[in-house]
Structure formats: structure tokens, C-alpha cells
Length: 115
Image (tube, rainbow, N blue to C red; front, side):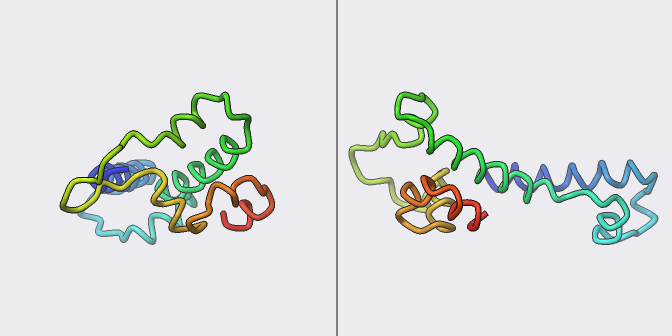
């Protein structure tokens, strides 16, 4: 997910929480205080958990599923271009589970522990 969309989601959630409590900007209530009052989970944390669960579920299915084929597809036949590399779906999974994340995802109990 792009950084600008992450920031926009977080900002939108904070605005909705303020609206739920009937607060205005001039009330100057901190985001931590608002979060403790509403008792809602952070949208970015929720997105990460859902992504992790769906990936494990999808990779344990048979090979003919199109979502698994698209995830494992390697479209590039040459090196990636110069500059800052675009974050890929796989990059977050490699960071959390290691380079053998495909093998780890097949073991449900180990995958749940990493969650």
C-alpha cells in the first residue's frame, strides 16, 4: 500500500473517531485519548492482520487458484529500474517470515504464531 494512502486512511479514521465523540479541533484532545475513549482498533493494524491471514489462507489452497498464481507470478525478466524500489506485497511477508515465507505459510500453526 502506498504511503500516501496509509496516511489518508489513518487521518480519515481519526476524523471519524472525533466525529463519533462530537469533538472539534479546537477542543485539542489528543489522538491517544480519543482512541482510548472509542476503544477502536487502528485501521493500519487491522489491514496488516487481514493481509497476513488472507495470504496464509490463499497459499494453503491448491495451485489452480488464480489468486495464488497471481501472487507467485514473476512478471519481470530483467532487473528492476534504478531508484527507490516500489514496495511489493511479497516484501512485507519476507520481512516478517523470512525468505522462505512460502514454506512457512503452509504450516498453519507456525504462520499463526508469526501473526
